[in-house]
Structures are given as C-alpha cells and as structure tokens.
Length: 152
Image (cartoon, rainbow, N blue to C red):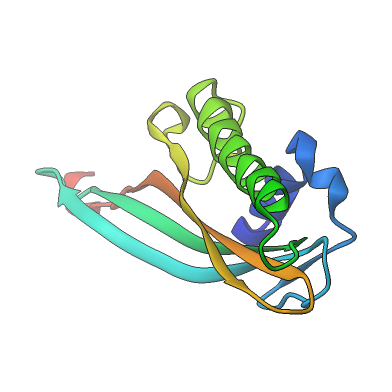
C-alpha cells in the first residue's frame, strides 16, 4: 500500500468522516461535505550514519487536508459546529498516533508520529460554504543497511 493509500484509509477511519460524500486527491469540490488530501511530498529531516556506513533517516510526509462544510455568512452556530469537527479530528489523530493505532511508514513503528495541526477556516463564500484546512504530518524513521563486501 502506498503512503497516500495509507493516509486515505486512515482518514476514512475517523468517526466523523462519514459526513463526507466525496474525498479527492489534489482536488476538492466547492460543494458541502466534500474533502481532499493534497500531498506535499517527502522531507528528509535528518540523516545519520554509523561506523559501518548504515544510514538512518528521519523523514516526514506532509499533507494538506481540505474540508468543505455548510456555513452561511454570519452563522456563528454553523461556524462553531465546523470548528468543533476540525478540533475533534485533530484530537483523534493525536490519540490514534499516541496509542499506536495509526498506519506505519518506516522501520521503527514506536518512533512514528502523526500530527494534525493548524486547523483553520481557509475561506468562506456568500453561497453558504466554508473550506477548512488542516496540516497533517507523518514523521518516521527509515533505515538503510549498507552491504560492505570488504567486511566479509
């Protein structure tokens, strides 16, 4: 399973995800109850090597998550409901990561961490929709063992 497939599967397990009709990659409709995941690729955070040349890399996948909800202009109740959903989602991601129930991406599952942060209203329109954005980051360790023929 690819990293993107793992993330999509993980996101679909959120108990509040059932409100969405569609969930896209690199795209979201401006229709309420649609969402999208926007991958930002892999970032190597750090790299170390041991005396034998084996390499340990700390990597991070970054994703932008966009969710479209109903929100009429000036509707504080709807805005609060949407914000509650976003904050509950972020708390759920933290809980799943802390309890080891999130997908794994590297070679050391105990050191992996998934965070959902900076949930914010991205934009709202006069037609009664609002888009919220959450940044999702997956930090994991990848180990590369060098085969040194001169040691054999």
